[in-house]
Structure formats: C-alpha cells, structure tokens
Length: 203
Image (cartoon, rainbow, N blue to C red):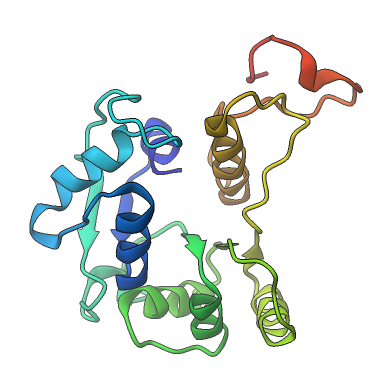
C-alpha cells in the first residue's frame, strides 16, 4: 500500500504503532526504529509478500514523513494540519476499539479522531478473525461515524497465482477506498472466467 501511495505521487505521513512494530518484527524479521526509520522502511518496502528481500526496487522516500507513535504534538494530531485522509493498515481489534471509543492514547488514535471530526476519509483495514460481538459493534460505530471498514480479505477472481497477488489486491482495495489510482490488481469486467486470463491486471 505504501508503495502504491508513493508511486501515485502522494505524500505520506507515517505512524507505526508499538503493536505494529512487534507484528512487523515477528512476521518479517525487520525492526522499525525511530532513529533509523528510513533504512528500516526501505528494507521493509523492498521485500515481497513472501519475505524475500530485494523483490522491489528502491523508492524515493522524500515524500514520507515519519512521526513517532508517542508524539501527541505531531502535525497529524491537529485538524489544521493538511491531510487528505487516513489509512489504518492493518487495524487490530484493539486499534478498532480505541478509535471507535474516541481515545487518544497514542498518535494513531489521536489522528484517527481528528480525521473523523474533520470529515476526512478514514479507511480501517481490520485483519483479525473471528470477530466477537463487541468488535462488530465498534466496527458499526466506525461506519456510522463515516469511516470505511475494509476487512483485509483478498479475492480470487483477479487471477492470483502468488501470495503477492493476494496482498496487492487488499492494498489496491484500500487505495480504491481512498480514491488513489493504481494498477495493483485485475478489476472485475463482468465476464466469468476472467481470473484465468493472463492479460494485464490494469485496464
């Protein structure tokens, strides 16, 4: 998703929560350190979905600004800070609960609250399963507040042949919800069997 945003020419304000850092370390082996965030982000973005390094080429990070999750005075914490919207990817059920309740325990929650009050697009890509009743109520509350609740559920009609295709589909749907153009997956064209074709994923 980050690659898609940067390739579309978007500027990115990046907040990596403490829980996300643990998930990133566990699932990829990459540490995300505030003091070395550019190096860590470059290593992260260079890996494929299967964890292999060097799959993707270097991206310029000039349009990325990193904010520490504990910095409640950061730019995105204020409604006057210029922003088009916010994407929470992935969103744990703990994150969902905090945002739905309007908490501001860290910069992620505070920025989500600001995004909703300023009536900017907020996309919440929840990744956990199964979901209990309380979480479902919180997701409904986010929907009613104007957020887009987007489960990280890949589709198979786009002709996925590799785990990267499944990841790209979810990332592409997040970008769709944010109104950002991309060519990450083959779109449905109203024709059965389209997923078995080998033509380009873009229109």
